[in-house]
Image (cartoon, rainbow, N blue to C red; front, side, top):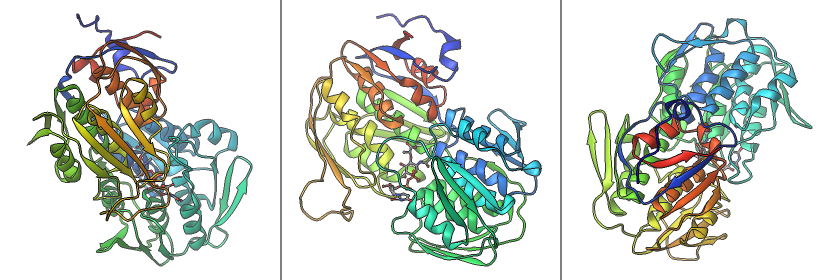
Length: 454
Ligand code: EPZ
């Protein structure tokens, strides 16, 4: 098989809407990819720039559409956004922040969930905010009740409108005691971005402590915020009157790093992921090794490949430091090739196995149990929304025509097509540009055999 002529222009650009890839599988992925800043930190750091009285600089910003959505939302609110002094850096000048008009905001909200995090900063700066209904991957209901309850506790008035929510803070925002029902990443970010400028102290209990959250705390501290992280998921924030801009380099994207690691496992290849760091991936690396993977931690990244024949594993997704819910989709593709029965319990979202339908169509043996598995003691407390997938392998994957359902599931479909014998047509791949920078260029660099057919 000869690798098709490389069309750099096509590869470098974000995957155009409506693109269809013709992927010829059966070839191991080998080579190097470099991951930039984490999608799930960079987008929040951009919102935090609204809180500063002076200019902020963010470094290692990934060139993905979720970043573009937040950039346009900031610009609609009068923030001047420009390129920084090094590749991948962005400069935010919030000195002209002004209220935007609904139609402009709605046009820019896109399929993102980030607009909900504009509430606190806009209430501090403008005393009001309008947040359009949110997008994001269809992996569950994705409610925002924790966010709205917290904002009300800070003193915000929240009014539901036909296509979004309008908020106001007639008496300003005051520190509050907030105990989250679940360590929600987004709700923790909501509290942090609101409490740092609120009057008085905020105590947040049952907070999320993902590495991206800790990186956001570090960035806010650079701005002059006073935040202390206590044991047992307790965070105290002392509100301050003024914050300055930050100069911050994003933490690396551990979701993208784990995705490429699983691609090496599934295709029996070898991939060096530049920028990946061990500390933030400890749990992933344990599961990767138990599934038959081998990794070598180096100064500037981690080398991933298969070590032995793939082995079945039992995994429960959980909040940090557990096995991330965003890691199970690419892992499951590799587990279809392991000899034996693997079990993945999804405990964070209520509908995150939809992507397995396409894998079954390709020949995988995967049973999804919508109400979990009644079985013995578990490391992770069962939640009423738990689902479980039972994967029995090895089953050769056959090429098929598949439509990408969401970001992480879509990545898995591409890896499955690269693992399968034959040529698969994969459509809807433009969603991958939301979270994977230069996705086609990276696939090409790893020797993947594919064409963009539309
Ligand atoms: C963030 O989503 C990430 N997205 C997700 O990554 C990630 O999977 C998730 O955190 C968990 O780590 C971004 O950061 C943009 P949650 P978020 O609030 O903040 C329930 C990706 O592919 N919940 O921790 O929305 C919720 O329904 C994406 O990069 C409420 O019930 O996640 C879910 O069951 C996918 N009410 C659970 O909590 C609320 O008000 C975890 O959600 C908020 C959340």
